[in-house]
Amino acid sequence: MGLHLRDGALHVEGVALEDLATRFGTPTYVYSKAALEQAYGAFASAFSAAPGSLACYAVKANSTLAVLGVLARAGAGFDIVSGGELQRVLKAGGNPARVVFSGVSKSREDISAALDAGILCFNIESAAELERIAAIAASRAQVAPVSLRVNPDVDAMSHPYISTGLRENKFGVDMQTARALYQRAASLPSLRVCGIDCHIGSQITSLSPFVDALDRVLALVDALSAEGIVLEHIDVGGGLGVSYNGESPPSVQDYASAILAGVGARPLRILTEPGRAIVAAAGLLLTRVEYLKRNGERSFAIVDAGMNDLLRPALYGAWMGIEAVRPRAGTPQDWDIVGPVCESADFLGKQRALALEAGDLLAVRDAGAYAFSMSSNYNSRCRAAEVMVDGDTAFLVRERERFEDLVRGERLLPAGA
Ligand SMILES: *Cc1c(COP(=O)(O)O)cnc(C)c1O
Image (tube, rainbow, N blue to C red; front, side):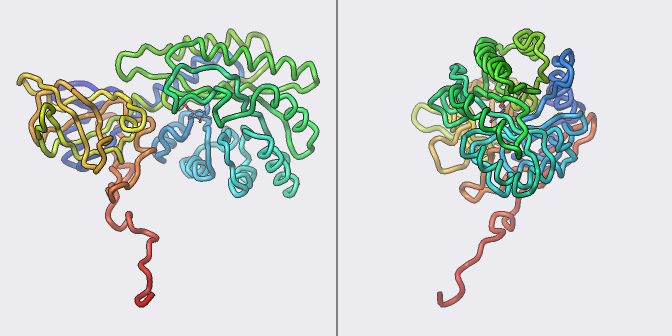
């Protein structure tokens, strides 16, 4: 993300993190506009050999308007999972004709809003949802573009919480059911069958699960074609991993080559739904050490960012790189970097060798994905500010929350109740 040391301190592009902490306080998320553009560009160009291919950025990874706006300007499509995400994409200037709508529980309101907007495709996840979308489209005298999210039953070899392509997951429909559902969809005049979709999980660090899934999905595409159901696109989902701690996921180029080779000469438009691979490395969380303390054998650095700001370590045991913004010369010592929240799971990293003093600034790396978008107000903590760096300029793209934001919409009972 253009994160580098200059004059002994970390900078993002041309801006010193120390200056950002002074201007905007901490904890603050910091994004690099150039890194976002570069990551999206890499996806778009890796698939450019396939006519009409489109990378639909998975909004849930980071749904901040400014992030969506940068990607919209770069020509991105978007993968949404709620009506709220659709509204964010539209507000950020995204093109609804490049939006695919995933998720197991699309509400009636969400379906109507997506039909109003004119999205590219609904990724249907169950028979009941198919009937609901067909009925809503029929009642509005519209035709809904649909694909089925199939579950190819491959193990993404990722964390169980982020594996989605096994038969026991709640996502998608199994291959047998899919065949019958395609026939049903094709028989309904309010649906236009346009594609097929799968998404097998997240933080996948080898090509084989993608290739296995693709082969199974393509077998279904071919079988459907033989039955007269000819699809326009195949959406291979997201899931390409990033390197948090020395993992070596496939490059975007290698990933694209494998997909393109698998699809071969079939006249299918290729869609992808990358989330993490676009935004993870483009962001960091800037936090300040409040206190140092020792309990028994452990040394703790208590920082002003907690699990409410960055849930990944607590939720998945995820390892995130943590660096001193101005590295000290002293001998490093092992610290547990913990937050202010009243939960033992509230840590950002354990046993990290750093030379630290109270007041120091730390940068949690690769925090552009599943970080701010998963943040909460637990412990009545105001959510962090967000800043986008563009060259030598930093833009505040989300104000730090204040107490009024925490209680907005709440009411005390009337006196005497
Ligand atoms: C979360 C999700 C993605 C993005 O996954 P990444 O691992 O961030 O690339 C794509 N498609 C669907 C349906 C998802 O739920």
